[in-house]
Length: 504
Image (cartoon, rainbow, N blue to C red):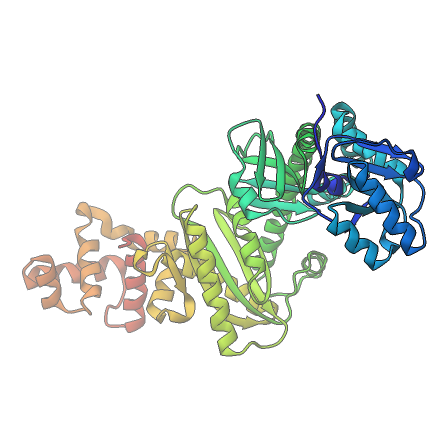
């Protein structure tokens, strides 16, 4: 059973002979097509057909008018021929007045073939689309986006990869939001229309991501064209799925390399190293300029690679040259400015990092710290260290939204963050080990004593003890540790050690 040939579908067909509308109605369709060389060879008494002539349009105005009237009187509602665009303006007005759609076509034989495929030969139409998809794989693709561009160029239509209602990649056009929202996510094949846009989508097999769909879309597509696209989408899907896996493996490897490079750089603490500098340059990481570091750490279970992938698009949109990679159980990154940024620009950058953190919180349990603005290689290492300290503090601060900026912290808070590192904690535990005997009451007393500014009475009140008991215990602490408690620096060291061993 044949379908009606819609003008919109004919215009959307990639190989339509270069047809375009020059006059007359545009919201039309035809049940059949008559192809002849001259106008006088066309059949008469037809009902709403399209005439395709291989001969060019007549030159004189009276001949043009006469031909248009005769074609319409035969019962045709459409006429396509070479040179129609050069016809007199009066002839074009006549075509519109008598309801004849006038089409200019560069290659009438190819137009006739397209009409036949769209009306009668669904299998041929589908085969043609599948062949174009297969031709896309003959070209070497650098990545997924490049592969989608090849498919879009060969089909002459739009191609998109979507996930959970969001466009990840698109080529050959922008997927209409109304079409995107209407695409079904459960079925294997989905055919969708919204306005004059139609889309055929297929689920993409991926072991780690269940919501991926490959979408082929275009304007003015007829039913036969949409059905053909659904088959083309199925043929293209395995290649797209394979390219996704290849790119994911390459991305994981690249992140592992960048993570190791950042670790090597930070371990140098700003000291020059030719090999590290070369690798930084090759990756496009500049150590010159002014830097603002940030760190996102896990407050629970977290896949750092997924977090890095999630924040990537928003991070790249922040003012400044942005870089990030995985670091331990989180993500570390920084913004680089070639020239010293103004205070307002720095504040805008910090606000953008806060927005980045808020966005990440929707899917990940993270805490974020931001370092201070520093310059040069040593400054880059310094701001990254500060960001790590701030992130550790942020992990215990729900009141700040799990976000802390070093510039907003006091000296005591920074020192307390430092006491959590791998060097200080074992040293603190060794220092205070003699106080762990007897259930740790000496350590409890020392900690309360230092928290209460070395006041015997205040400590006794806080612990519910007699002042003499507190005094005896403090003297015992001095004997066991061999530390002069009257020395302010000694008291500070003990205070920090107590905080490290007995975190609040």
